[in-house]
Image (cartoon, rainbow, N blue to C red; front, side, top):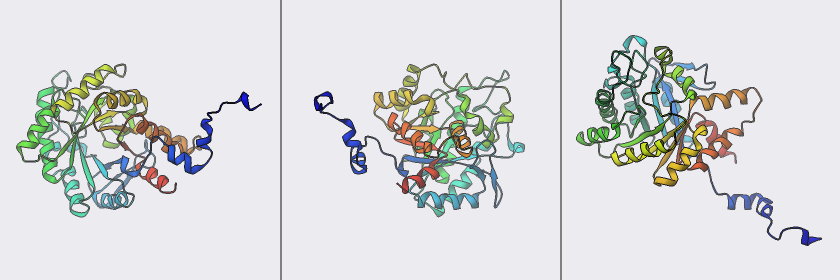
Length: 331
């Protein structure tokens, strides 16, 4: 009777917890996570983001409390995104490179109190423009590439002067990584890293994020398809990544994550370079709302992050970072 069954039984290694741990091919730890945070002016502010349950816009005093929690959970880095008042938004987005602006102020405070926490600053103009686009537009609403890069370079230098460890250009302008690298080096920020949003798709999963930074009302019915990537394209993503690496990117990113696991895999397999993924606001909102409604178990959080890591991501920007780190500490 035994001859009816295989000698090789893959279930043997699944029988005990210790052997499951030993043969596990992919692991998650809090060191894999970057926590994206939305910040606002004022004091003692913690504004709920309706489209992202469990996430808040926080003032800088509460940002420090949050930073301490990240350190205690061994989460190595935080990514900052501003929500500024509409009255100071302009067509050129000059607040992006105001040395006294909200983001530089936040960076200085974080680095003063928690220098060990990595601080990542976004490189884009959409939180600052009156039209909600990531760059400076012409009379027809087209985002101009080179003049936008000039503004991004100023933004990068201002953030680096404040103490930012990483500049993360998310704008998708052609050639911006190389110019930002030159600007940083010219100002003696040779060790300031660049995490390039290299394959950033024109996705419908960004809606809650735009609510959180306050750019959705400015953008209106306009879209970003003339600079963000077509979701149908994969080879183009490799070209984007290749260009960014050649221009000096230290790390590259695919955004969104779950709908683009194939892109993460291809990038990592092709370039063998530090590869990151952004589990974006829409991905977070879908899971969080389903969990809160009892439709899904909270265990889906770690499963979704494992899928991103398994595809090849070395690090993951995720709004689940705190929940995931706590869950991992219990395992």
